[in-house]
Length: 346
Image (tube, rainbow, N blue to C red; front, side):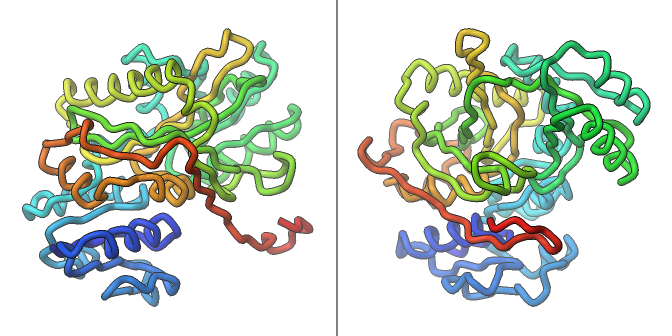
């Protein structure tokens, strides 16, 4: 079996290493564009990371399975291209993946499924956004860009001056609108991932990633400074059932809309301590999370390739998936350097 993993980060390194080493059935593991740290792959184009879609598809050639890592490929319709060639692809179509690259579509889908999500408002100009932030009665709010931002499109201003600055930056960057969302001030956040064949879902153990750049939850949001799995919410069976119900409802709704979803969905959730520990879905990603994947996969005792193929073939068997025992946990540590011009010691 020949498998291609698309991407170039830690998530793709983790996926490729697991795929290459877990079964004799995998005769070839290719990572495109890859990175210098991935040693398990036969082909690694890290010297040319900016590949066009046509080059990307042509480079991969005829494969038995393609696994898409980053969201940018999903927005570009790479899954559609592979599927049109008859290649089994673990990753949603461009239309189905709009749950991530269009924040408004993702929020509207959650509302259509009656899934709890914080109140929000879409503002179409900088002036409207500034006025709304001054007039709204939310104690704290989050400002979010509507498109893809590599996990860095959310801002938590501490005062109105910071809010004005964020709004100015967003609209100066060419955005046509911005989302302002009520911030859940008391509670805790975690990530939940399901894989799905468009009908059935398998829930992975919950994980938590450290988003802020600096220690003690300070500094700007990053794409993730590390993760651990499972987090404490995984052991609350009521929360676990509720979250799986939320994500199953999303999969069901997408299928009803004629855009069946095949791939992974990673939801960022918040337990709201101000509302009787209600579990809210903040947003959804149309892929495995990074760095959550690096701490989730070590707990999977089943064959990953078989699990992904089951999704692609519409034959997902949730009862067959096995996990490590409850005393086992995994941690991903991200080594980082300060951004240029920053005094941070992270």
